[in-house]
Every structure is written in C-alpha cells, then in structure tokens.
Length: 362
Image (cartoon, rainbow, N blue to C red):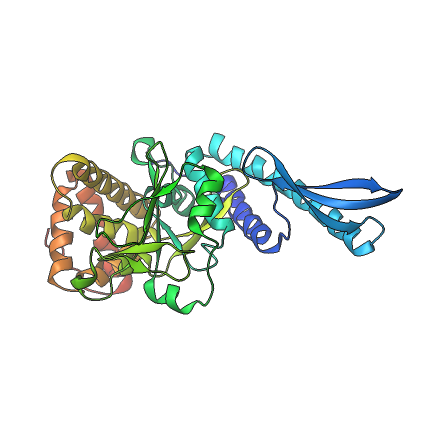
C-alpha cells in the first residue's frame, strides 16, 4: 500500500484548518457575491445568491459609504480569494496526491448538510464516504474498487440530539436545494416519520442513531430534535463506531470539514456488521464491501504503525459480550488469508504496545 507524500499530508492539514475557519467565520455564503448599485446618485451594496431554481435572490446590505460595510466587503473578497486557493488545493490533492474525491452528488449532499450545521451539532459521517477520507487520515492511497458509493449515511447519538438544544434547518429543504427530486421515503414501520430520503436516481441519504439498550426499539424510528425534522433508525453496535470520532476533510469543491469515525473502530465495526448480513442480493454485496474495507484498513493501520489504536478498539469490542465476540469471529473468518494475517499482526503488535492481553480466537 503506497504512502502519501508528506507534502500532500501537510497540504491536507492546512486545507482542513482553513476550511474549518471558513465554516465558522463566513457571514455570507461563499457562492454569493456583493454587487454595488447606484440608486438616485447614491451607491449601495447588495448581496446576490443562488435561489436553487437557476436564478438569484438579492438582499440589501447598506450604503457604500458606511465604513463597516466597506470593511465587510473587503473581508468577503479575501474569503473568496481563500476559497479559490482551497479549490486549487483540493484539485492538487486528488489529481497528484493520491487522495479521493466523492462523486458530485455525494459531495453536494455533504456540503448542504454541513452548511446546515450537521457537524456543528455533532453529526458524524459514516459509511463509504467516511471510508474514502481515511486516505488522508492514514496517509495511504486507498484502492479505487473499495470506495464506490451510491448513498450517504449520517449518524448522531440519540442523547446528543435530545440535549444539544439546537436544530438544523429542515433536512428535506437542504436536500432539495441540491436536487429538487429528493423525497422522504416512507418508513418500513408504517409510522409517520422519515429517516431516509431519496431522489429520482435512487440516491439515498439515511440517518442512523444509537440503539437505546433494548431490541424493542429496533425498526422504530427515533425522533431526533437536532436533525431538522428527520428521524433516525436505531442501529446496534453504532455507539461503538461513533465514539471518539476524528475531524478530516471531504475533498469536494473547496473542502468540507467533516467528522468521521476513528478508522480502527470503523474496521472492527465492519467485521461485526458483515457477520450480520444475509447471503443474497444487496445484503451480500454490502457484506463483501464491509469485509474488503476492513481488510484494507487492517493493512493500512499496520503499515502506518497505529497497531495500538486497533488493539484498543478491538479489546473494547471483544469485552462487550458474547454477541460482539461472535460477530468478530464470524467477520474475521470472511477475511482473505492475507487480510487475516494483517489483523493478527496488528493485534499482536498492539497488545505489546498497550500492555494488554488480546484474544485471537479466529
């Protein structure tokens, strides 16, 4: 597995910080522009932005003679310059640096959710879009066949959504700003709640949350006050996946600062999830992808000398009980011989580094 050059690693870190700074400081959307107009021989500033329908809306800002407004316009010009610079950085990282950009729909969807406050409200990007960011997190080139996408999965802890005291704008409104054909998908329980949304091309955005200790909550949509009217499907083992997430950047347009699971937790979680998939249809396809991604991460973690991270995550899952151990064993049995060798090598090395015993009963 090829490593990513230190120059590109440094560039990604710089892009992440600048993108995060821009997300916090921008008072006006970066896709808009200030426009000066003269009315009755006096100049005024207006702000034009896309209306989502191919046109633009125009908002009054104030007189050009106001020094505070003039300062704001100059700051915005600097932000636009930074925006162009960040776009060039994203292009360099994907074209030359060996990192991966999402498909256009996925990038636009994540951008809309991020602008709506998803990551500020402690939402976490999971699934394959998160996996592709691990090229930057681990500084290795990921094989292209492992990162094909077709949907976007987002998680938020149930307790966080209840307690954060804030909410995103309506999720459907955000998604329709990307594609007007997005519609809520009726929930399989028959309840009047929506945890997923789909467009005419079958691209799906799904919201998931932690299961609240009892299987009685499974298949019942959880009301999520922070998610702008969306509910979320409770999922077993999700609390393990989204604990102690990491910040990184989705390489779309000028870079989108996001939060994703720790890669070691992601890899162990994929073993468990794969063991619970069915052996036919789409479930089998997803199972194979789970195992492939887990195997890639085991190799990457071993190569980048992060075995202690994997050992800690593995031991935490192993100690959670019989169902977790059965899932790990079954998932590990699906790995190729080479990937299983990488997993064992990681755990043996990691066990020494963290000074803990680790069971290798697979």
